[in-house]
Image (cartoon, rainbow, N blue to C red; front, top):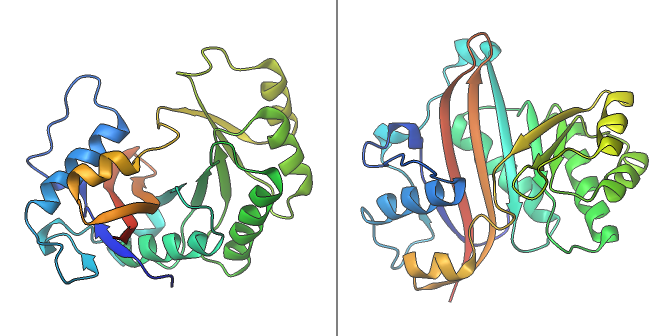
Amino acid sequence: MTQGFIIHTGNILKLADLKRKPGHTPADELHDSLKIQLSKASTEGIKEITAPLELSPLLISDERGSQKITVKLFLSTINSDFIKDSLDAALAELGAKQADLLILSWPHGIDFEKGKDLWKAMECLVDNKLAKSLGISDIDIQEFIELHQFAQVKPEVIQINLESCCVVPPELVTFTRENCIQLLTHNDPKNILPNETFKTLVSSLVNVHWTVRYQTLLCCRGIIKNKGYIINAERA
């Protein structure tokens, strides 16, 4: 696993101080949950901040079959090693061996060849049974089609942000229908935790490497049981 300073929010659904205000975005949610957890711990001389035990999400083994685990990765530093690191961290937090769906938020402005390297790293996780299926968000339509053609493990989900695209492009609708790909919408920003925002919370840290969000969903009832974030950053 790559080195870095790790922060766990724990299961934010149990954070009584997390106020869910109208218009609260995922970025607001992450910022506020980090602020709450960081207020309870010092960052000096340690490498990792874990959430208090009572906030840790406990995925009961007997319930695993009825819960879907989704992990979404936001890369701030392009490094294919971070793909496995982030998923390992999320699965360890949940006490699970495999995610049902791993989604990559396509890094803004990334060279397509480097993007293919990231996808190959994700495919290795499927081969090693750490992820059951793969998805992607915020990728250009043509790049998505090219990535689909390139991939050995085809993306089963694509997410688009309706804030930047109020109408789903017909070309994408046709392509996903013809290739049995689930088309979803979301409201995550491309950069969910900018360095400038993070420094206001932890001044001793300079660069966010990756942010991962995990959640478990009760399949039969559509209820989210656990939801949390893990952040890997570089200390100054």
